[in-house]
Length: 385
Image (cartoon, rainbow, N blue to C red; front, side):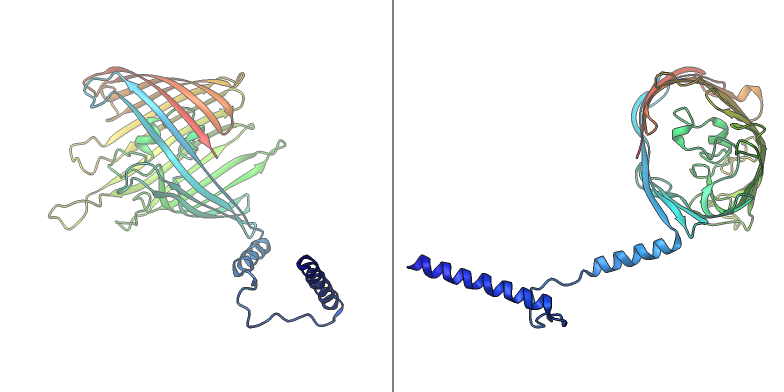
């Protein structure tokens, strides 16, 4: 008897439910929800906001991309007098976002997040700029970005071919600059104009120019001396993959941490010029020479002139392997008794363009060191995502 009553009640409930759905579907006026109900699902405000953002981006022709890369390494050297001759290291961990807005504007924000926290260490901004790119003949970049000097400096660390940039780049283009500037990764804050002229039949352009005005104090620092660095370059490309060019730099660096009694901060001129040439194809070769005038602001006895050069080459890639070599030279006072030479050989295996491993051997002859001749070996893993 109980089963019969339950079955009858269930049948009546199903019938009533179906009838209500039919009436609701046939009615011209939709059934209004009960305003007193508290458990009914509501329209998602997040979904509404998300759709509005997507519509706004679509209307501006915007795109956005997130990415990053990691470089980890192990190095050993037999130089005397070192606290440690071997170390594991996270050379770089970087994250970035970039894209286009309103079709003609390119933007990029890049963070470096490895290293101990502190000034010019740990998490910090390395790139933050917007570039107007409507015309190939004239593009305007504003923000914090690579200085427009040399071929190697603007290159991504994954594309340099060795475990470090050359001494010409590190000492004379603002990585650990000889004038005493804080670590800047070859970057500064400013504005730059650049462009390309004379398109060739294969699509590349024959002439490139670039000129920029910068604070002269490096990344994440404001101007300290009312003097703007003027940096520019000009190169030609006779055939695709080949560039031959020259660069100039009229600048000034002011030391910000001076604690002496004088009211003015110590500063130094930074006058430089450079010559560069490269060919990038199956075979690759690149060479640069940089001359510099400007002493170290923290050492009045430091020499004023210096120069550096390097030449490197890479054999065609075969079965994922590529062999590279480099001769890297720096003269601290532009005399031969201050020459530091590094002879480098690197063998890289590419799993793909975003993951590769590199083994490197360096022989260093440094006339300014107590241990003039020493060897270094290292292994680096590069991963891009």
